[in-house]
Image 1: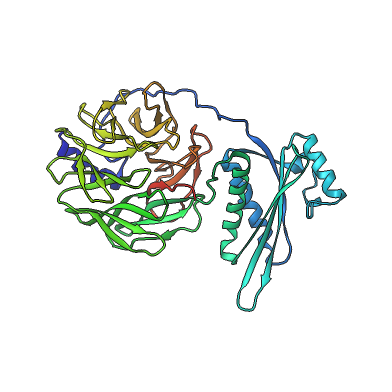
Image 2: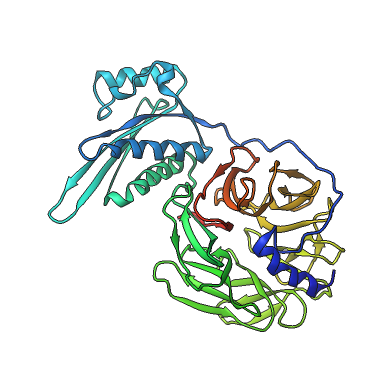
Length: 446
């Protein structure tokens, strides 16, 4: 397929099917390798509950529900069912007293390393009501209450309080930021249009960012989470690369030339924008300096090149090219040198996404004529398929801790956003509204 055919197929594929390249037939066999194991032992943690100290009946229960789900999703902790161990979870008040000590000892005797609990109340103010939440942490290793956090805000940010407490727990025990306050940008259908949306990492609190009435596709985050860069289709013949500031809605065009201008991706330091463009006649990879606006062409090949993805160091790019006859993954240095082919298994591999730790590249692979998610090491020595089953799986994006992936899938008939662990387990559907949700991009950590 020629470069222009590849670029032309990209628009239809972005709208309807997998990756950023046209769909091809394949006789490739499935390849399954053992999933990687966690690089550390999970910490056993029990949630004693969030007591309602005054306010609506849902207050404590909602905080507790969100906190437990965050803890479980973190993959740092093994969430323990305390009642099944005979532990009376409501016997802890402020972390003091004989009842609390008994609970602490029971938990420690059953191998529970960490206990968390809290209390929340609705405080009536002169104008508005605020929610006050306190969270406590007991560590059996030190045999004492080791921490406490207080949060205050309007009832509308109750979920955020639980997310923040969960992130505090992750940071306390790993030294790394948690993901509970991260966001996911994605594309959602509005009639015949496709617009950019942002939601919490667990699928809640979605809000619409664009309202152009046509096509806005392939959003990607800036390193500081303040901006999104995406492809804006002014009409069927004009595609620009735009940037929008989330806090203000301010928007401007970063690159506008004739032909396709698609698959933008900002470098880890935000100083460069890599993207594909056919403004010089063939779909090639370019690098735009966001400070000087200087534009450099990185690939020079009669075939089509698309979908650049930065390594976490910013020194390399993964991309897709059909220079070998069908779409495959390639790597090159950030200046366009040292180009080498990465994938050889199967005749369709596309939509690369480099993991935050640099040890894996996720992508869309085709096995038995099904489009699924695979990962491969940058040296090409290890490869495994993550997803199975029906439907088209597309557009993988890593969580900032590298323990999860978000992607779109038609497994339930319509295209929706899903989350999975990095070993392919624990699939969780995140979107339920609308007829089409796709192209997710996971934000950096806050």
